[in-house]
Every structure is written in C-alpha cells, then in structure tokens.
Image (cartoon, rainbow, N blue to C red; front, side):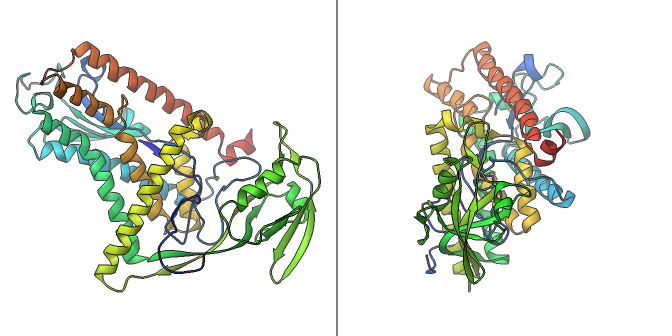
Length: 443
C-alpha cells in the first residue's frame, strides 16, 4: 500500500487537504504482485503500507496536528493506547478489504486460492478452511492472497483450468483489479456513513493564523505566545484577510530570522497584544520558535434532510477527496526530488491515525477514506510489486497475442520489485519509529 497522506488530522470534520483547491462543501458559508516458484512457490497479489506525505489536514476544533510545525515536521506521540489500537484497526481493515477484493474475485470465478494473509513474514496465528490458509503475520507491511499456480507441493495439476495462470486474460484482470475496486467502494461507503451518522462539515475562514500548541521552553513560550492565540501580523506583514498562504507567510518570516527579534501581533480573546519572539537557530541555519500553526477556521455540520441529500452530499465529498488525492500524488511525483524524504511507512500512518482518534473518533472516518483512495490510486501505478505492475504484464501479454513473457523475465521483474518494497519497508519502519516524539525524548 503506497499512500499519499497528510501528517495532520481532523476530529470534528471530514478531514480535507489544507491546500485543497475546493472548499469542504459547496454550502454558502463565509469564506500484485505475483511471486514465482523460486520465491514463494505461488502467485501472490499483495499490498504494502507506505505513504507519501505532502499535504496537511485541517483540524476540526481549530487545532492542527503537526501542520507546518516550525521546529520541523514530526509524528504525534502514542499517548493513548486506545487511539493507537483504533488506528491499527483502521489500517488492518483497509488491508483486509483490499485483499478480500482479490480473494472474492477469484473465489467467485472458481479460481483456486491457497492463502490469505494479513502482514508478511513469520506466521503469528493461522487456521485452514476449504483448502485455504488464513494467517496473521509478524510484519505489518500489508497483506497478500496466494495462489497455488507454481507450488510444487500442490496436488492440483499444472494444466487445471481453474489455476489463475490458466484463466483468460479478462478473468485475471478482474482478480488483480478487484483490490483497487474494493478500496474505492469502501472509501465511498465510509464517506456515506459519516454523512448519515455525523453530518457533512462546512468551513468558515477567519483572518490570521491559529496557534494550536506552544512547546514548553521554546522561543515562543519564552516570548509569551500562548496556545489558542491568533497571529494577526508578523513584523510589517498584516494577516487581515483569510488566505491559505497565511501560514506560509508566518513560517517564512520565522525561518528567515534566526536569533533576530520578530514582532508578532496577537489576537487573544477580546484584546490584541504585541509580543517579541526571537527564533532559535536550527542546525541548517533557519529559525524556529516551537509552535504548531494552522489556518484560522471553524467548522460546523450540516445533516442531510432526505435520502437524496445523503447521496448528493456523499458524492460531492467523495469526488472532492478523490480530486485532492490525485492532485497530491501528481504534485508528489512531479517534485519527487523534494518529496522523497517525506515517504513514510506504517508506523507514521498509525501515528497520524492515533492523533486523529485521540482528538475525536469521528476523524477516523475520513482518515480511513483517504487511506483507501490513496491505496487504490497508487496500486494502479505500473510498478513491480503493485497491482498495476501485474496488470502491465498482462497488457504486454495481450499485446503479444496471448503469449506470456518468458517465466524468467517475469520472475526477475516482479522479484526485484518485491525486494525493493521489503527493503524500503524495513527502512521506513526504523526511520518512522525514530521520528516518534517519545522515541526522540528517549534518545
């Protein structure tokens, strides 16, 4: 699973990308891989959870999780075991839905299936039913559905018409693409459920930049900045009009003035005050004051009045999310040299999800929807180790008049992709773990 996800979260609303080109709603408020015999002796369609972070989510109660933190982007700490379990449950559910798509697409066509696994590596628990091994494995890098096509221990004849490799191209395309389809359907179902049970959020924007959190003993804390303050001006720059660029303006001034006084005009309750903050100097020479910043917005909810509005609200929100996911991935790949360092793995996904759940469990709805959509889009990319890579091989086969590539070439392509994914997965697990707040405090 490769996912383009923000590092922020939203408790009271459908999380939306902060740089979205569309509003949260249009309501008028103020502004698979298959392994061949030498590897696993079976064909396997799999997904592994990595994601690309390049967008920010809005925080529904006017609080933003790690939205352009001056001290650098980091992941929230695992402060609540319950929120962590909820995030793990969401990720696990998405993996199961994806693999179930492959599984049922094969099962309903009478294609032999030998394995259904959540995770990779050593088996932690398993059971067998109807000649299928169901297992939970040690490494949470995704899951897979295994087919006995090249399994030397299988007693199924190699020319059995119900082996996946012997089925017509169209049948195989259905099996491979079913995981992506399942995630898209699941994403819509999640949005639909939130519209029905919680309501659709609408946004009202205000001038200034909100300060959701100030770190203790930071430059901002020493200067008198408080959580909940609204920055209405920085040096000679007035932030009097609501705009998505306000956060960036404040960040730029602070980063460009290490060890130099910065004058902040602050809205605090019913009064306006001015404070002086001297940014600390980072190792790279930029300034930081140790705060989180987010757009100054409020959210309210609109409940659908009838079934027609349920479908209309759900469709609008689903299309908006899909557009933002596609746009985010486009920007990521167009600027990959700048965004490569933001590729993160399952630890970061769980950290973000835990922060969402900790703020408000309602936010898990869109967290799950965004993960599903990202997984669907990324898995269609024609890369080895992804469903799109397998589809690409089938398209090559179709273009060759039904003649498959030599087994050795196919094995080389797919096994190299799997190796890259596994190495990347281990690297990201280690790096993301070291980036967690409580791990940093221990080091």
